[in-house]
Length: 94
Image 1: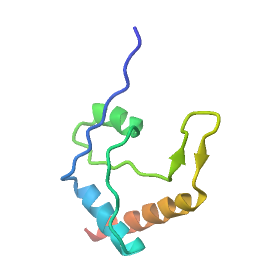
Image 2: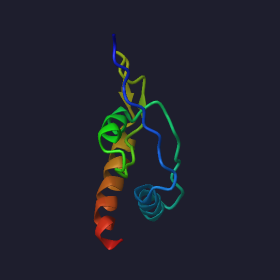
Image 3: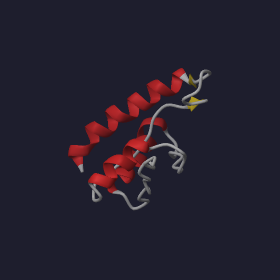
Image 4: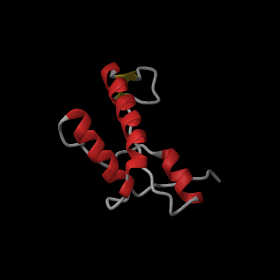
């Protein structure tokens, strides 16, 4: 019997999500597009072991994931890196 991957239900009231949205606004001058998509497998696995863990899933724009023609939008890699660095710097301030 094949085991199904853990599902992750994002928490719209997450303090970490609020921090990321605030940092995004400051870094990029606009609102973050928060959406639930077919991704975040790692969050599902971690969340099944640590159900009270506050987490967000984000990354660069990828097209055709896990297929021979998979592509990444190079500009979005830098943007994701900038967001991560700024969010990590903002965590002690809260």
